[in-house]
Amino acid sequence: MTNIRIDAVFDSGNIAVTAIDGAQATLTIPRDHQSEFFQWFHFRVSGAAGRELELKITGLNESAYPGGWTDYRACVSEDREYWGRTDSEFDAGEANGTLTIRYAPASDIAWFAYFAPYSLERHHDLISEATASEGVEYRCLGQTLDGRPIDCLEMGEGDVPVWLFARQHPGESMAEWWMEGALETLCDPADPIARVLRARCRIHVVPNANPDGSFRGHLRTNAAGINLNREWHEPSAEKSPEVLALRNAMDETGVRFAIDVHGDEAIAANFIAGFEGIPSWTDTLGEEYNRYRAILDRRSPDFQTKIGYPVARPGTANLSMSTNQLAERFGACAMTLEMPFKDNAELPDPEQGWSPERSKLLARDCLASLAEWLEG
Image 1 (cartoon, one colour):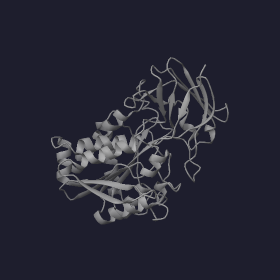
Image 2 (cartoon, helix red, strand yellow):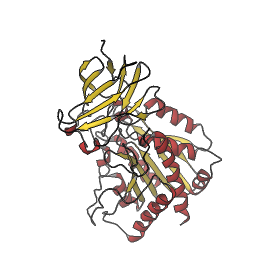
Image 3 (cartoon, rainbow, N blue to C red):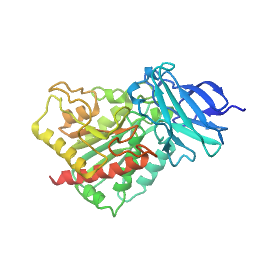
Image 4 (cartoon, rainbow, N blue to C red):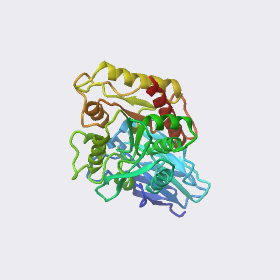
């Protein structure tokens, strides 16, 4: 029996092959460059037609979020358009934590990923299409360490500065799928949500704040191994030019409302994290944040407020994180939106789990909630 072939030398690819025996393989996930983080995988298997693959990813007890593997099912695609889920089982006692993925492809090639990838090429398509839309302006905020542009799209005639940005953590690809859904809404001249928001706001959209990490197949860091969402208190051109460029642009415009879009490895739910522990906390600002959460909870069956991160005690907020820094710096109603790598356990989808399609739909609900929030 011939051995299958496994490749990962492509945009956002990440896997290392330990052994291959026929249709079985033992794999490990390389760490982010100059970092201890690892969890993201994306690879291609060929020579697979008519065979049941058994792919064992080992050493996962040392991954960034070991709790993310329990009840997790790997993403798989044969056409790179539709991403489904396949049988996956995690055993913490096998080879220092092993995820066993089983799949029988219909064709000779199958692609596997931690979540449906959002390629840099698709990102460029997204930017180009949005820029060609009426009333949308393109702005390059700066340059990454690998020399890539930090793309920003601006639109709207209003005076309320709104910032939407995503993929500080590049392996959280659902965040850019959310951005695609947001831009499809905002760039549609007939969409009533877009018409309200563009009339009231000046909207700044950064679909990918970490293109270097995205292309390199990192989970959480940029080209220098830096976690960008721990740099907002003191970003530097040497380590975190992405955050420096974003924060400088925000200083120019001000920020009234901001969503930093992320994904969570372990929690099987959509939720929002706020800024409760900032030194300048006021009940008025807190009420604005709670009102937005309540509106989104009412509008979207995929959103909930019961499960989330622990709330920081007064005065203990980590100001190196974007949401806390923006609330403290600007008095903004800022928040971190978290989507699951697994599924929404309260409304599960056995075929796809949490998916690109649902990420895009949630984006429209988030924008509709913002339109309603502005009326308050």
